[in-house]
Image 1 (cartoon, rainbow, N blue to C red):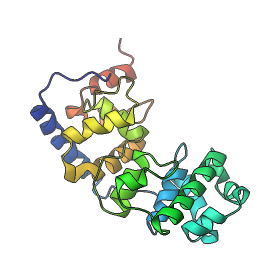
Image 2: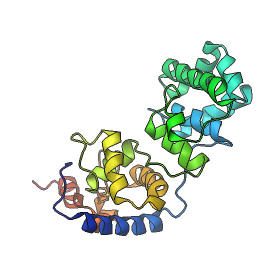
Image 3: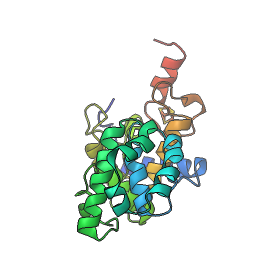
Image 4: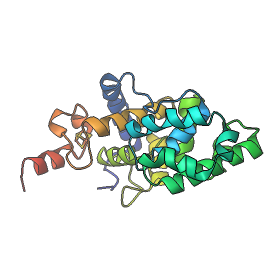
Length: 232
Ligand code: SF4
């Protein structure tokens, strides 16, 4: 599933460009679906989105941000109050701990403002490269990496544009492969577009290859089509 295809790097880069052209036709306005008004809100929303849906997070965050309007207010809030508000997003105890730890660090080390570099963001508790890339790309317009969530990892693997992660789940290795072949100007778009594609067409259990416009540039389309039609 994750083996490197028999194509040269220039050939793979050309195929990726064709995929990006098709994705831009499909999702011309691909953007972050998490509702936010500033970098802090996006950071907290992204932490909450782990193992949850954007819809659920978008219902919870207006309540959270109305109650707590700054990193300091969130850091100082009673833990059980935060847990109660974010309860429906799942893993609420761990998420409340991460949110308050992150907010405390933002207050203590960054004067209350979300930092805008990868190195600084990675010092925040509960923030790994995926969250840092979301905040850098969407809130600050800085392209330092590619967001690799479950959709991006799965579809990039099916598309044969990542090969280093043996189980197709190592986000750091997948991101490194993608940064080799996706043009930097499209790094932010790649993440947003594949999240959309994963929800609409290329879902985990039953990718709809017959109606997928990426199929002619996707090496696994025939495998999935054959499986769906019951072929051996
Ligand atoms: S052709 Fe199938 S496997 Fe490939 S991206 Fe489209 S839906 Fe996914």
